[in-house]
Length: 213
Image 1 (spheres, rainbow, N blue to C red):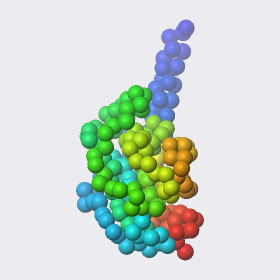
Image 2: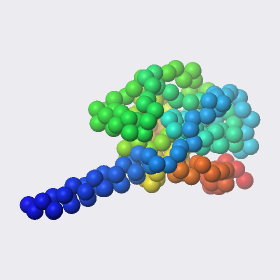
Image 3: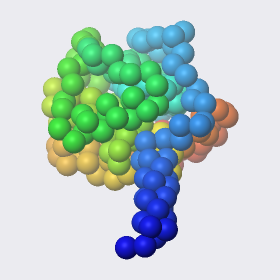
Image 4: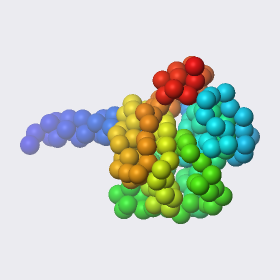
C-alpha cells in the first residue's frame, strides 16, 4: 500500500475516533459547569407541581456538574427529597482519564459500589433519576443503582445530559431493568447548554408530563 495512502487512513481514523468520542462522552474543550459543593442533599422540599412533595425523590449522578445543575432545577420545582448518587471509589478528575476509566468499567461490566444513599424507596411514589451519557449508555454506577433497589410499582422519570446522543436509548434500558415500574418520557439536554439557564425547558417538560399547568 502506498505510504501516503497509509498516512491518510491513519489520519482519517484518528479524526473519526475524536468525533465519536465527542458525541459519546463529551467535548473535552468545553468547560463543564463544575460540581457545586454548595448544592447538597435536601429533604422535605416544597414544590410547585401537582406532585405530592412527601412522595417525590430526585436522584442524580454527576461528575462534571452539568447533570447536578439540571437535577437541582428539577428538584426546585417538584420538591420532595434530593439526593446525589456517589461511588465509594473516586473517579478521575481529568477528561481523558475519566473517559478511559469509564470505558474500562463499561467494557468489563463493572458495577461500582455506591455510597449509602440513606433512602427507603417505600417512602416515594415518583422518582426522578438523572445521569450523563457515557460511552453510548448510562454510567455504570446507574446499573449498580438498579441492581440494588427495586423500583417495582414506582413511577420513574428519567433525565440526562449529553453531547449529541440524546438519551442514547437509556430510557428504554431503564424500562428493561425495571419492568414493573412505569417509566415516563425523559428530558435529555446537552451538557454544554447547562452553561445557560434551562428553566423553560424543564418547565415545558413538566407541563408535558402533566405535573405543571
